[in-house]
Length: 109
Length: 135
Image (cartoon, one colour):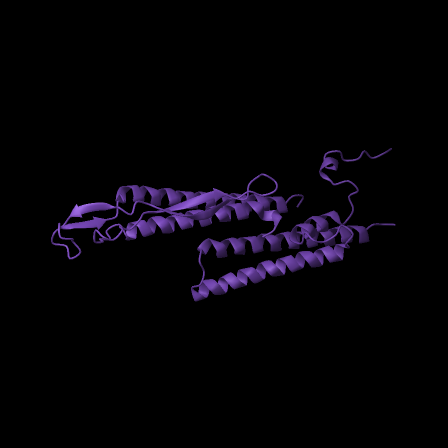
């Protein structure tokens, strides 16, 4: 007896799907300069750099808000929302990667 | 910000435009009763010039303030002989701005700003739901 592949998710996956695509999409969006040959670790590091820059921007705007130098209120709230989204995305990517790793580690050989 | 949250940046540019417009209309209202002597120009109504910002994809990158335009410096010449600034004929100059029009513009700018905030919120919710795919 053979097990049929799951056709419904196959079109959604990029060709030659491996463990890295989740990390690649996050890292390449946060740091478009990285090359496709980078390891998953490099990509995560790049994504974290982007995240840190985003949070630094929020901190800068928060200081401006506190000192009365903020020119537009929405600049701060938008930067905060973007940093929050980016953090959630990074955490999600990390969780999926760890999940995949654990799945492999639990595999019975 | 990155390409990933492009909609948020577009909404931000819209908010910036409407904030500038609100500033301009508020300035018009603040100066609506300025009186000048007839040898001086009247306060000129401020108009904000807005252009769309293009990006490579063609989907658009929002709006941007391209500058300001100014109304008629003639204003209205009115007869107010008791006014300290009146000339020998008793005439003074007031800006030719209609307060009713300005209040409508304030409303439009406010609604436009709120619409952009709504766009932002919808986009944020969409991105958040994308994060929960497969959870």
